[in-house]
Image (cartoon, rainbow, N blue to C red; front, side):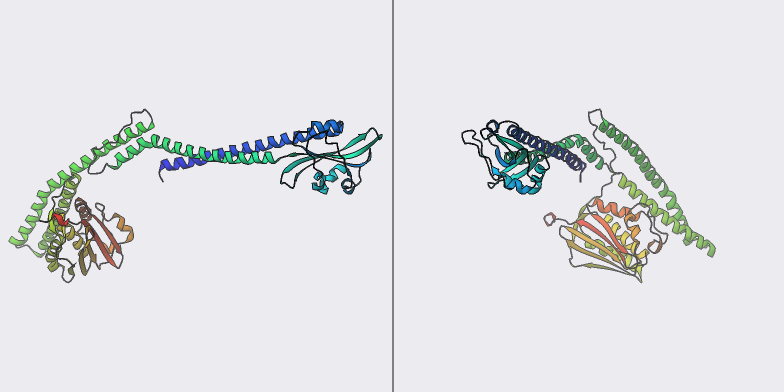
Length: 476
């Protein structure tokens, strides 16, 4: 996951939490405000009915209010139980007095536990649902209804209910609007953060791409320096300064390796030549023969090391191999013919189902690759080395298989590193320089291919070289 994507996700998630918290807060505050408004309207309507004349109170009721007045006892007496309230008589006001709706079922819809509040002298408050599914907020109290003509006053249960359905619909619509707002705000903010991160991090991406193109073969490249005076500019300048120091160090090392290898070729050749001359033309003693043999072997080993160092110096200097159409099978057969007589009792075989497998390559360099792989297998004690060659789609696959002691798994990732040598059963018996496989990888890469290795201790080793096959249209 890219830094830009992570930044967009994490920042958007944080904003989503904040927006959700704000939306919930707005919803809860709005709900509380609407409920309080309904409560205040209902309380005002109840006060108008209970503290003034009934007719005047009814005229003041809101147009959507419901009411019920139940006469339950002679004032100032109050009912002793809920049954006394439910058995009361409804008070009916002439229709000409008010136009507000009435509902004689309010009392029936209230549970006993709510009516017990009235008996204890408290006001009641409850929510009920009418038959038409309309919800009401009901407030009630015990009051006195006077009948002047009869000179009597009666205790009455006064109930007032105000609809809350509009409040619920308003809250539902508010919830939908807030949800949609949060989603749209989240999407817009996520896109904005992603776009902003892209703009901010684009110089970093350019620096990364430029730095990835810098290699050991070409340290002359530099990362672009942004025009802004900020941390990114300082980073780019620091990277370029580091590359300057690396290039200077690499060039110094490269020149030293090339010069030292070149200067060593002449004395090493002289040492080997004189040792051979003394062995052939003089009559040294047995002890002298042994010493001259050691000098010759070590001189030849040093000569091979110098040769390998020169090869790598050319590689570091950007040397390019010369490629031409060639049959890779012929290279394998030449290696078998060269090393076969020297490998006895070990066997070297070639396995290829096709007589012609062409690649664009340097025959001498590719022969050097195969010789190195086969010789390593023989040095490791293999008794059978098989070179298997086949066409694999657009590539040619070469596998060098041996039945040697195998390579430890911890050594496989380092096998193609310079001067790396495997300890133990797979060692080259002290004759190797640790540079052969590094040269193999360089030659294969120069041909546009790749090389890898699979091995298990005690089961042998397989080196695989994959090269681009020559297109049929390119044949002469």
